[in-house]
Length: 423
Image 1 (tube, rainbow, N blue to C red):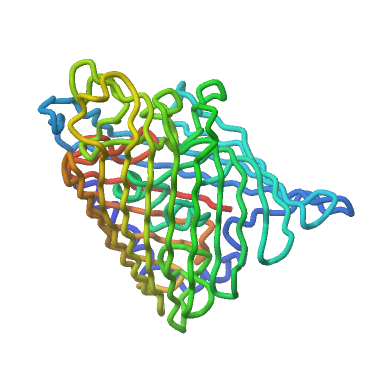
Image 2: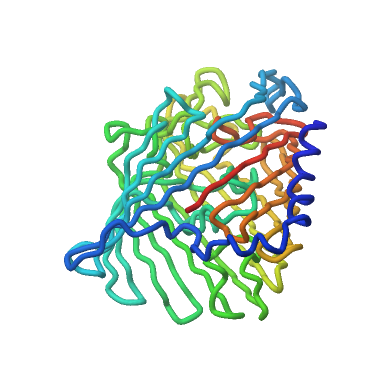
């Protein structure tokens, strides 16, 4: 891990050494706003790009892990460089400035050959007032804070802590409403097809259309929270606070689950990493065909003068099992809780950010956890480009995918370094 240690130190050294004259070449471009291609009487077209290149070193992880049923399984350890993701966005308005559209092409290059490796998607929306914007298309179920629409403004580059990844819903087709209840209280409410539709075709979906998810968040300090971002890059000079609550409900079946390595995959797992729909998992001849997922999360955060502290609590229960030989199950429901905590500090405003974070799951089949230490360097004092370096210590991770730096069953230390563009 010598290379990893050097990589983490480089942003610190470069940030300190950034010459004062470099500020003359710094753009005032707002990250994620892209640039305008066309603006006319009947509509507008804007373009933006997001992507990152990742160096990943998992060689210090254990080569196998044993699940809660005593089965030893291999861990596919990686050491590679990938142009991991590229997303091209076109957005604007049509006919009426309150009728908005977003279209995008997204490729997760770590998943070449798998379902949803390339996605062409988007959504339409109409803003009736500050209290209501109604949208339809593909969107994120707002079941946790990280799916409220604050991507990619996380501390790590395009990856969540394992508790967040384990409990959260994902992206699906549906309709949703969002807006202000008051100046400091906002809501999101969505009805979707299932917990995760990426990599799932229409024929695989059930006909229940009952994935409900909602978020309500209050920002009593300053009335905003940096767009919901993690970390205080905005350098609040007054204390900013937020408190949020989320709830998600969905009937899920085995057929409509995305592949375990699908990009942005969201699976219902137990805390040793096994998917609950695996035939024979809970006994010979026992197979769960469908179940009902419920998930509650509560979060709170504070930002002040470059410092941020954010926490989130999760409670998930799964019941109403149907399938083969279900009467042989030793339980009526599966219930897990967990939490995550993230602390960060801009040690050099708009240039260098350090963070420490961790999460833990208290499950019926194990209590996995992770701890992270990272640094983000913004070489041109602009969030459009950052170099992020992160150590992650895993204790029996129950989640993972090719698009993520961690793997199911991962135990030990890994390192990832990411050059990210969010123009």
